[in-house]
Amino acid sequence: MNISTTDYHAAGEPFRIVTAGLPPVPGDTVAERRSIAIGAGGSATSPRPSALDDVRRLLTREPRGHAGMYGGFVVPADDSEAHFGVLFWHKDGYSTACGHGTMALGAWAVDTGLVAAPEDGTALVRIDVPSGRVSATVHRRGGRTTAVTFRNVPTAVLARKVELATSHGTVLVDLAHSGAVYAALPAAALGLSVVPDRLAALTAAGREVRAALDGHSALAGHRDGVYGVILYDELPDTPTGPHQRNVTVFADGQIDRSPCGSGTSARLALLADEGALRAGQTLRHDSIIGTVFTGRVREQQPAGLVTEVTGAAHRTGEHRFVLDTDDTLGAGFLL
Image (cartoon, rainbow, N blue to C red):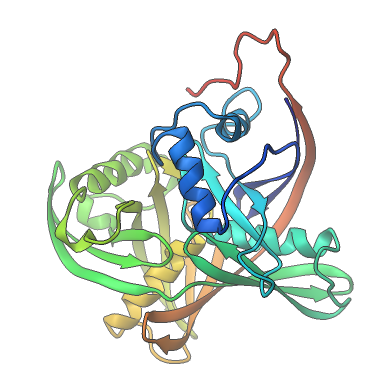
């Protein structure tokens, strides 16, 4: 096996883009390709080996990756209106949405010349993802990318104040769908705060909340269930709007180092729904490592609120990964 990638990070969260060596990905749409990939490799969270899944596992497992790795397979767009499509993946399978990955892909498309961009100004990159069509507006100054704005599929509030029994006591959880389903609650409700030295407890709490929501009636029609649990701290408002710090625990205990792009869309819709984010205001959303996304609501559509989230994306490296036929570790391992 011989795989080439270009790696980025968006606000600290990695995104590995496969640029060569990918086996054929069958299907007529991005959503269909994801379904086929899951069908060939097991479930979204319990994959079986397949040619495509071998690549995902190779790139997310040690010694070539790590349990926090995220990435995407670039595939054809659904139609000529988008520049390309992408299948998002992580150590546990394939996700339907990824805001930080969309930012990284926008920067990559401009950096490689796939999408033309001015020295000064913006370039719009349209991307088909499993949850629909999203876009990345790449901001440029002096021939360099300075920021990327992710425009998500519409976000809908699914439920408010869902009561859950946890080992920390009974908590109230809000649910929103922003390309994937996110559950949100204050970290303080669990006796925690969003700081690095509480990460183990935050991770355990996120996994517990996700498990407790499995099969909940509010998730009817969302067969993938809850993708991420957002634990947040309230911080003093900025002059332009609310300010929160969060950690998103997604998949099977994976931690988003960034403020979570799609998760920020979920928080925007929930804050707007409760009147804490007014028209024209901006949410400053901090991550557990101190990086920042800013988000805003752009319009109301029948399917939900259209949100935009802005952050920075930077290239971290270009790689060629190989798997020797006599390597007894195969695609690698997770600790």
